[in-house]
Length: 396
Image (cartoon, rainbow, N blue to C red; front, top):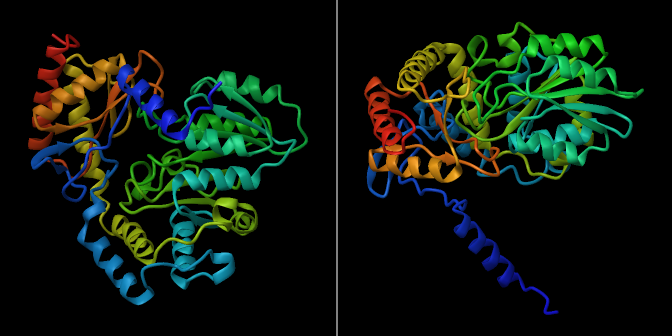
């Protein structure tokens, strides 16, 4: 039998994606991430970006990025454990720990790397992990790297979590892992009840707050703060700097000593060059800006409430969204992709999401409302949805 070549493998896989209608190709943007974006020379309302607070193109962040670039250079040069760590990296981690009311914080190159690094560096053989069924892919991959025993509990089902933890037989660490805000549905983990169940069984809770950071809690401190769980030593918080904070990277915040342990154990930290200085400057500026001007979050929620109320009034299913992530259910992947194309014709950039990102029959368009959207932007998007929904028979 003839061995398959690399070229044949690539061609065959791409052909399968095209035939199934599941292939995707990122749109090329011709300007910065803003509430309106340019694609193919056209200006469209942008509902596809995680730029919740509008910080990605904010002058204050750009000015700090330029300042750090000129003073510290384009890159960090090497991994921090070998080449040393810039004082700006250490200071930013102190800033994050203080902001999150935690004993320590450590920055990674991305939120994905943070989950892989923390889970892989903390967990050992003989530990036990209970993971929400709808957790992000970075958590799933991070747990694959860990040698701990694993079980899945039904999405946000605290009674099932109680059963899973009761059945765990371990002398090691017990860990409950959850997203704070679930990225495809826009709902919030019941972190207060989850902490109660975890404590009943001597477990700790690990929350990936990528979409809660900058959105929930006082001054955007996240899901834990939203539920009044500041400073808990049995809580680990992971988040990104690439969504609401407008830069790129990820971090973990937790009890004193956690960062020091991970500096020595987290492979995603040990073997990766540190963030470029300009990125550190922009992220640090974002944390300062939200504390100085918390009205960004107020605007975000005012616009979110308006868009969700109006889209539901049309008859669309928003899958129980509680946050600025407002998914609209279309069912099959081809229908979601068709709706996305219709919206594009009407001047709205919103991307269809289907298999394998979400289960079959649950394809949707995930809309992100931001603080920068005007009422005019949202009304334009709502009218485009009305036309697309009627054309596809989703609404009347």
